[in-house]
Image (cartoon, rainbow, N blue to C red; front, side, top):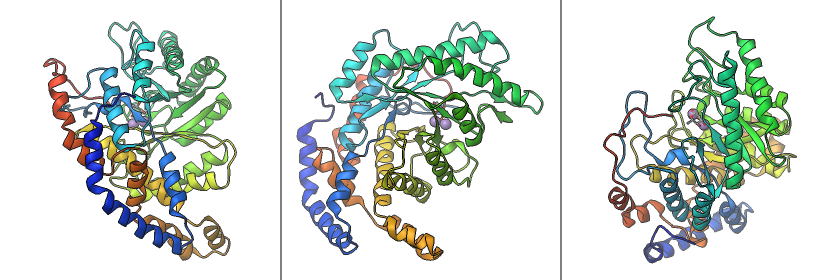
Length: 431
Ligand code: RM4
Ligand code: MN
Ligand code: MN
């Protein structure tokens, strides 16, 4: 397998830390044993956890005001893949990439697949983009795409989604994620029902193009770029659409796409119950679709979401198997560093949720012991599981301290030389 980080450096860095890790791991193992938890079983599960990196997250993000490009950022999907390989080599938990089209379109998909294979990376959910016009596009998405009042624009959006499925098939992906920017900025601008009907009719056409073993995931978003209403504004509209379209269509939850204080874990539970949870876009948010690093603001919320997910796993809930993806925009950090750290923060929530004693919790719930039920969760959340995460990484040849190795390797500096920036390629950011 092709490596982007020098193995000798990685091994030397791990060697410096392994004895401390062994002590911390043994101490945590003893503590967990007193609660009848086998640390080895948890570490094995931690090692199996994987979350996909969004290809678009490897470049520096921006706002609608400006973008401040970072040194050595990838200029195309091949270079994005290189960074994804680094992220996976160090974190050991990001063995797949979610591409976005047409941003990641190439003329030769087999070449792209080969490069990913060589890095040991897989392709997961392919994303379509009908929220911006492409150069020379004849029928605009200015007033919407799949729900546009003009058939020609809708047809273009449908065809694009079908094309994206085809690209995904060439790469070996198995699902399509659809987020549209469609909506309105003024009360009265759009007939709510008619817009939703047009959206559904268009999505029926896309659904027909899904291969048998594929799923389609719909992403809702409360606002932006439309600021008054969006066609798929909330999980209600999302679920209605997914139910209308059929069993291969499920809802995707992007953590930043809800109003502040929304109980996202309860939405997750509802979607699980009705076999409609397709996947996640993990990030964190304070005000809106901020796309901040996962777990950087609301780690307890992220843990509570995983509490629902682990509960479904524990109960062997039928039809359960969501796709985990990050969806972040990095404006002030090195995107690779943020993605490494965020993947591990999501993995951390998963591991903490594994520590909850499910039977004890059910018992507290049945007996209406609110405080003890709450403490069952809080105690798991409060435990520092870092040694488990580090051990899982070490055992699979990833880094005990990923960011230290990343910096030691001088990766970004090397990329700044290898990938000179085009001085004309500025402009505002997307996402
Ligand atoms: C949106 C949404 C989508 C992503 C775009 C770039 O806000 O989160 O998932 O594809 O941004
Ligand atoms: Mn998203
Ligand atoms: Mn978003």
